[in-house]
Amino acid sequence: MPATLRASLDTATRSAEADARIRRAEELFQAGRRLYHQGDMEAARAEFDRAIDILMAPPAGMADKQRLETKSQQLVEAIYSYDVEALNGGEASQEPVYDKSPLDDILEMTFPIDPKLKARVKEEVQATVSQLPLEVNDSVLRYINYFSSTRGRKVLVAGLERAGRYRPMIQRILDEEGLPQELTYLAQAESGFLPRAVSRKKATGMWQFVQFRGREYGLMQTRDTDDRLDPEKATRAAARHLRDLYGQFGDWYLAMAAYNSGPVRVASAVERTGYADFWELSKRGVLPRETANYLPIILAMTIMAKNAKDYGLEGVVPQPPIEYDTIEVTASTHLSLIADILDRPLSEIKELNPAVLKNVAPASYAVRVPKGSAGTLTAALESIPAPRRASWRVHRVESGQTLTEIARLYRTSTRAIAEANGGAVEDPEAGDVLVIPVSYPAPRTASSEATRRKPARSASGVKRTSSAPAPKKAQSTKATSLRASQQRHTALQP
Image (cartoon, rainbow, N blue to C red; front, top):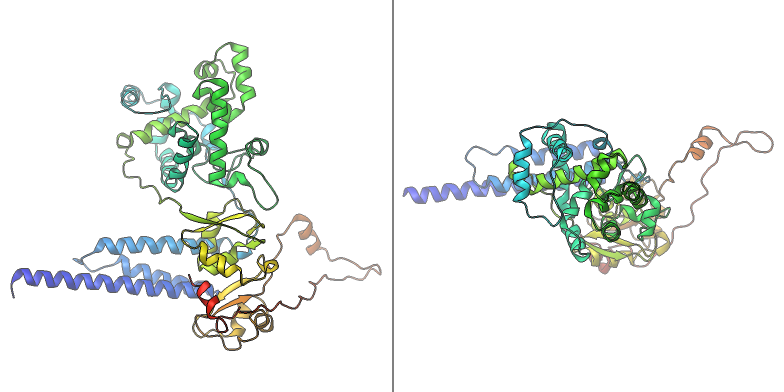
């Protein structure tokens, strides 16, 4: 056999083996996903681990290793989303979870200056194209030195990676509002691109709005939602606020200082000293210390990101941009129901909707869902009674599952499930999609905890325990059982 033909056959064999490994890994992942939805986390984790092991330990000389690595990364990210959901308690987690603003710690630090940096950074700045003026002084050099350290680099790199998720949206809005693109780094300094970042002063969201300033720019807060946590709405508000500040001060450095400490404080500092210059105001100590450090942090990040190769940042890979469709829900709708219908982790739906505070999107709210899934979701929601969308679930029957097992999984009764699905679900088949009438636990409060610890007493002084009222008879809906309606089966497919 000719050597070239033998080599070709060997390559084809190794490629076929790679295909087989990828198929097997996908089968194991799907098995783990089914176990996860059945509530068996330990078994799910074992299947997930087996899927990754197959991809991570290919034989020496195997072709298409890059394909195995790509598939491995895809599965790792998918498994991580299930892990996050499990750690947060799944759908039972009703209270919002916030992140600490990274700016809080950095602003309080002082850093030395590397004397070797100054000349080099000045040369870099002179060769850097920027819509925002870039200056180099000791304050900026201190933060460049910090972000070059092991600790500071972790903060910088984490922000640069997360920036990929929102950068296209931010760049579009800054361009529409006529602002310098470099203001993107203001969000990185403020929050590290964490939509639910909260500072010690209760400034909230990716652009760190306090309540009154958020309302001034249309970021409303209710018991159910907080627009400051919505990346797109907050970006639009921040762009307009910065544009107004620049109009007031005529200088981007003063505008950013006013964004941090408030326009009244900066205007007062200018009036008292007669200097409309950020560096002079900082030197004279008429700005808060954190504001004096705020601008150098942004400038340091901007200079380093624009000269990535000089700072060893050229290998930083931004995360893929978030893409989504939007639908306006006509009734209060639980995010878990949306996750069920789309067969996606709840954590993924929550990540797309960080402004929804307690997992229930109120009526008329614009919910974001994975790209391409809006039609499926809209059609499926129409088959569920509007008053039940904040509590009911949807379940895809797995092979071998009984109605009793499904009822136990959701802490409801087989009778309630049967009534909600038209009564024809005694023996559900694999692939059937059932509506599940459930109720979510109310979030615990201090008062409810006290009530739980201290039983109430009746007028006669006898201890009594409260019990939930008997559940109302579940509403039957036509065509909710997939075995009874092929149309709904199609609507609920992922």
